[in-house]
Length: 69
Image (tube, rainbow, N blue to C red):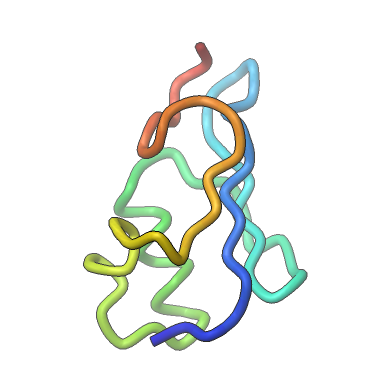
């Protein structure tokens, strides 16, 4: 499991959310699949399950919402 801070920032006006893991921006997620891939690259063993845990800090917008509000 990823034991480092995971922050998913608010949806941008053009869609997608910046993803920061352990202080580093890994990219823009446009879906849960993108977020799971970033988590996998960071070393998560079960990234698809991790995206639904309380270990991820979702800032602004609803959880799992990637389109602009």
